[in-house]
Length: 300
Image (cartoon, rainbow, N blue to C red; front, side):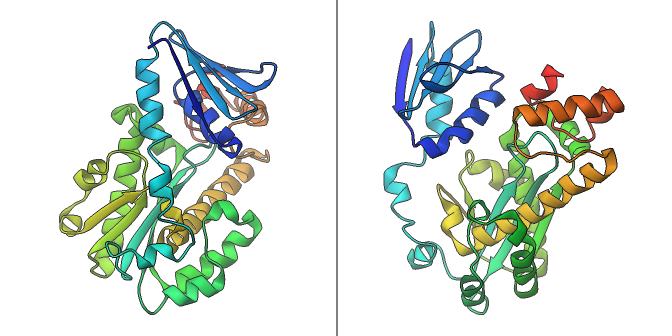
């Protein structure tokens, strides 16, 4: 296969760009397109029409990754989640269940945070009426208030992997999905230590066997479900808010420590700030603030 095309939503621009950055592609600007991602093996261009074009001598490997990690959320799967309450009506997911989600995965600075929240008959209505929804639909300034409501009404766990530890684990595992699976499993286990539950739901980021294999004694008997758009579920949405709150706290701590306002994401401003920290302190010290496997680190 020497060329490949697929139509994406324009809103998926950042998600696509992060995907190629993690594949160590060099991102550049190009006329009539948002960007071009280039490696020795392929060139990928995301046009302003939403069309993604990949060309190369053999693009089979990168296409497999795209179809596995980006296109696995098919229209049929997405149709299951037409509203935040819909998942409660799906028989396979009981009202009493655990939801997990993460924050910081695509951010150069700050920790990777994974949270788990258990919902049941007593707190589902409370969370719904409070306006709990996917954190990406909530302004960061309102995250702390909503997180407080979740913590006061739910059993939860927040697993924070700070940059230094993240870099250590990634160096051993060489795979982000394995690291995510470990974090999701720990968060689920921590909740199960407080109260038994038979079902857990997370957003789909890889083979669900990764999480199952990372579960310990408490989690071995739980039914684990991974679904695209799982953040439509109230438990997963609540977990996304707790994870986001802790991630923002981590960003604030780094800002105070180094005396720079730390930007989120993986932009040119992020690269500029990282260079300032490296110049003022050292490149070695920078490892305590960033995820070193990102292409941005190799640019410094």
